[in-house]
Every structure is written in C-alpha cells, then in structure tokens.
Figure 1 (cartoon, rainbow, N blue to C red):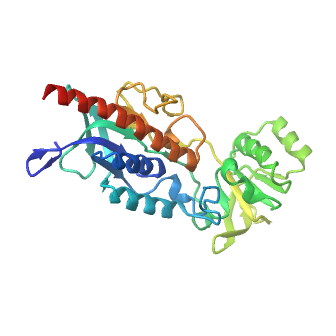
Figure 2 (cartoon, rainbow, N blue to C red):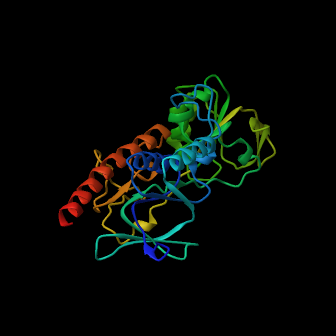
Length: 316
C-alpha cells in the first residue's frame, strides 16, 4: 500500500488524469484542505490545442500546454501532489477504499474517493505537416473554432459522412469549403448531391501533405499531386478512443462509445465515491465545461468527505 516511512497513506482523493478537468478538480479540493494526488502522463487533447481563443480572460490566445502548466503550479501551491505515472488498475477493497496501481509505482495508491479525468485519444492520421499545424490552423471542433474559418478557404478532411456533416456545420462561417474523403469511407449519393448544391468541391482521395509556413496552413497536396489552396482545415474522423477502460468491472454506466454517465448535479457516477469529469462524460467537449465539471465534482466530493469526517469524529 502507499506508505510514507512505514505509515499507510490514505488520500482523500486520487484524480486519474491531469488535463484541464483533473487539474481544476485538484485545485478546488486542495483549497478545501484535502489530501489530493493527481496521476498524469504526457499527452491528451488539451496539448493539441496551441491557440485557445474562446476562454474567458484570454482574449488573444492561450495554449493547452500553458493552461496545464499554470494549473499544475496552482494545484501544487495549495498542496496537491502530482505524480507523472499511468494508472493501470482500479479496484475497491472490502473497506470501501479504492486501490490504484500505477505503471511505475512500487506501492499502490489508496483513496477514499476517485475522480476519473482520463480524456480522449483522437485517431489522427499520419500526414506530413499535421503536427506543426494542429491546434494552430488545423482544428477538431466547429463549436470551439468555427470562428477561425470566417471568410477563409477551408478543407474538411476525414471520413466521408462525418466530413459532409461537419462541412454543413462550418457553412455557417464560410462558403469556401472543400471536402476530402481521406479515410475512403463510403459516401452516399445523397451526401454528394448535398455538397454539389452547396457548391463545395468533394475529393475522394487521400491527403499527402499539409503545406504550411510555421504551422500556418497554405494548402493541401493530394495523393494525385493536385494542390488545393486553403488556410484552415478541420478533421472529421470517427473512432475517438474514450479512456475509460479502468472502470471495467465497476458499477459505472458507459455508453456504446465509452462515455461515462454521471449525475448532472454532482458529476458522481453510479458507483458511489467515483466521479467522472471532462471529455469522458456525456457532453460537449469544451475547456470551459471541463473546468466547470472539475469544480462541481470537487464541491460534492468535499461534501461527501465531510460526512465521513463527522462519522469518524463520532466514533472517536
């Protein structure tokens, strides 16, 4: 078991995932004087975003990496512990405590409550230039970044049906849209007719490379050698992997895609003392919502922990 100097350490909360929602949870709980540890590994969707421009207080831009750096610093300032390690198993013992084993840790972590903030892994295709542009001029979310396409020539790249649907959403912002069926997914004739009526070119071929200058998209080279001039691109690939495998075997409802169902008021799952926040839950995947999830969950975790504190006080 997790021990310090031979003494068993039982954390109030172990937060699995150190993205935006996990760090916001840690900050709120640490400010409630709780003994909190965050397990974090490099990566995550927020690190892809180099230019968030829709967050209160950042009218120019802020990167996901910077938000996480500031979040870690703030959480530590209030006493939260952050461990760079990967949780590999989660179980509950007969006393109702949770045991979290990690990839590199010698001893497991023991906690009274758990927060799952493990996020999503996106199925990005291997295309030259993608890494440099992703989060700056190549985007994932029309809700977050549709504004970046206003008046711009853009490409929607992905699997046919999903790309057609996203093109329709983005037509609110621009009428200069090219759709690329990079995944060679079967596209119905109705979808093709829909694009024709809107005047959006459709290419049933792969993207060879993104042409850019310092991450600012200039165009796209197709596998045929043809180039398409665009300044923005949006990805529309199905199959994002919701990272909720640790919950297998626990009484937590997950939908067909793996998203966790939580109480709308508290963010607690059906399994008592396990909370879920951020992109793994069933809602819009936005930074502001992830922050709200974290703060909301932490407030209700504090209420639960206060109940336990009072019970222990009565016994003593």
